[in-house]
Length: 284
Ligand SMILES: O=P(O)(O)OC[C@H]1O[C@H](O)[C@H](O)[C@@H](O)[C@@H]1O
Image 1 (cartoon, rainbow, N blue to C red):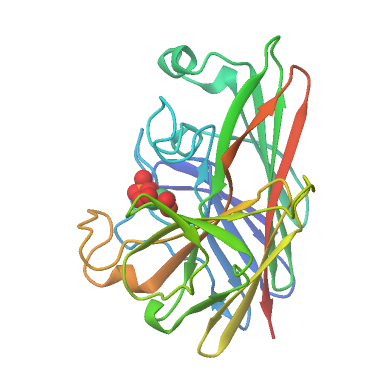
Image 2 (image 1 turned 135 degrees about the vertical axis):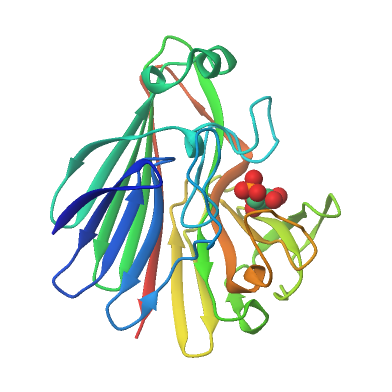
């Protein structure tokens, strides 16, 4: 089934499988807002105070940070893709394909990032599984660089009881203390902002595909990401961040586990294409 409706002023697209699994995506930011599994409830977090407004990012779901992660460049934080209006390019029973190109940007955005690009996002739904794939093409005459993240907000009942496994082989950039260190066990339940980088074995320039496990009482979610996304950002603002669209104790209800390419920007030659994905599977 495929629905289209208006939510917060932006068109919303939805898929539902015969099993009852559902996904909903806003044209604003091309952002997945909800993913639910028939017998497993809602798996993504969306703030009750999230707003969909021009130039603003929606707090929750899966924001697409592109072509810049965080403040690592001249663009506004996390780039423009999460604030832009994406178009539906294709759909079938189990997937949605959204698109954003340089033609869709404002004059101001094009002036700030003067590159001809095509950014596509495919959202694939299978029983107990959601896969989001980004596909970037350089349509211009000169190379461009980008950093990116699928900034996935995973819903948990209490973040202090959540455990994230699978990052043991990574090195860590701690954004809070601005320090780099070897891996140390991650304790959720207080502010955390870490960029984990998968270091390839010496002499090897390839990365093993990452597989992470988010365990909460009664639920285990497996997260995989392509070898083109060699970083994992783990973020939770903790109780004292004072984020306007995260009221009260809402910080406890999620942890962001972001499949990213940040440490080494991706360079795309004219005519070249880059693909990166994150897949989430509910274990039953
Ligand atoms: O509040 P936002 O602009 O959505 O950013 C939320 C967070 O995104 C990432 O996880 C970064 O690592 C954090 O430093 C940042 O605070």
